[in-house]
Length: 210
Image 1 (cartoon, rainbow, N blue to C red):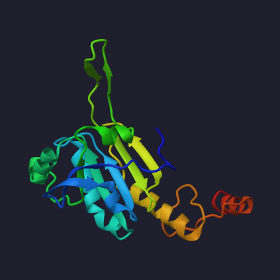
Image 2 (cartoon, helix red, strand yellow):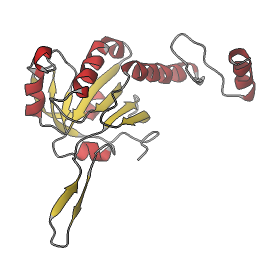
Image 3 (cartoon, rainbow, N blue to C red):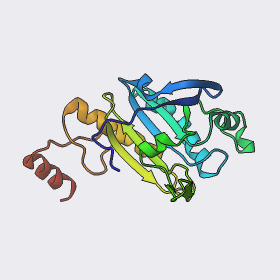
């Protein structure tokens, strides 16, 4: 499901914030009027996942100065999140991560963002069964100040994401909002944009690909 251009699905769930505080009614709506990077990961106490969580933490100040809230989410419980957050890196933990980590325990958030792996069905006796493990793929969603999804990407389990690319897309969105120009291929902050006209693209192509 492509969510780009649509209202981001809302949610209220338990979460761990500031690395240690459990909040029962954490809501996406709490960040209305801010940019949000919402990213999903498969499981606590795994291998690729902590590298991503620390990578976002390392660049957290970059997101904050762009008025962007980073939020992580997996299908683990808030107790699992809390326990993982208390462990040092040397023991495979993520102690030091401070942005919110949401507990999608009933898997509805992952399902609404269409990043839930596996599937479930009911047999003729009304019994439910699942095919595959019901955990989240590595989905990432950039949500603007109006609550609209402006970018999404979904990676398979073994493929870690590039946090710098998330920042680049955030910069591009804010550039287009401020200047009304579009961002061509490989654009990054500090480069010129392009007017969305035939003359604009012709001038850009002549300058970049002569």
